[in-house]
Length: 356
Image (cartoon, rainbow, N blue to C red; front, side, top):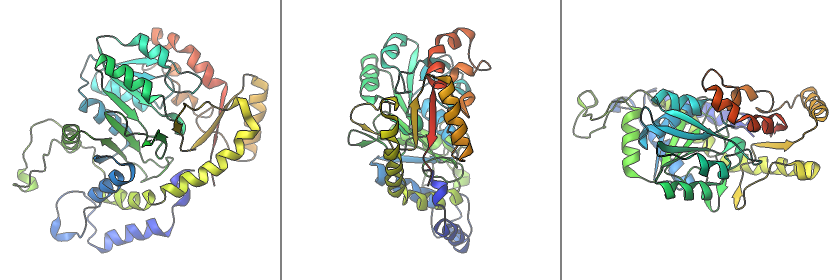
């Protein structure tokens, strides 16, 4: 269930209150015109909810991925391993830094194939970008074990699985840095927006400065005379996004609970065709995916879903933007040929959105 389905008078009132208390939409300064720093409050609420020491609100999940990669030390020419089923932003973020995307095939969970991951790590690998696709956590225990063996940092893309668990920890908090997205189709939404999660103070410091043109937010100086040590850019979240985000975050438990109830209604129908879930992980029930090798059956199911106005979610309606095998404008022919089997798995899968 996407958060936009639950937008109501509470989000509207939060925006009205923002204007009534001064109407400052920028997250910094203007102390004499405002009563709150809503982005900072949103960050604190995220930390409390998912039990992360630090949370950094940014302009989008895509920006969060790029910032996370730079924070763990990825530089131009480095290799970053990610998976064949993800949103195109992951590969774009790698390329934006000047790094080289190395694409790992997926297994039947539709997340990173751990056996292949162990074979494609090289001395040039400077980060692993694991993705919890469409609400289902990847095998982070195995990924973290491999990363530790080779001393490689892990970025956990949790843009599509907020509220899911790996053991007793929220997904997004079990690697070096986790990434969230709050775009309009996500579990909770601020329209656009995202966040980074980490327990490492130095990572939070670098990311916080990089997000804001290098501003150190030094309390000894006014913003116009602030100190700086690194090159940054503008990936800031606005106060208007943050007030909506705070309301949406308060609805997260209901979203997960209601989504689970609907998801569980579908499981007995599809039985062995259901997407496998890694042991000791718990999805956020964002999307129900099943596998069907028979093309005629897939066609009929999709026709019924469209006729009933459910549609599908990414598979197959937006597969071109979620299967790296189809990104010949970004990846080499050799890379695309190596991940053909992942595209086949995705082609034979149907994703049903969990709506109200």
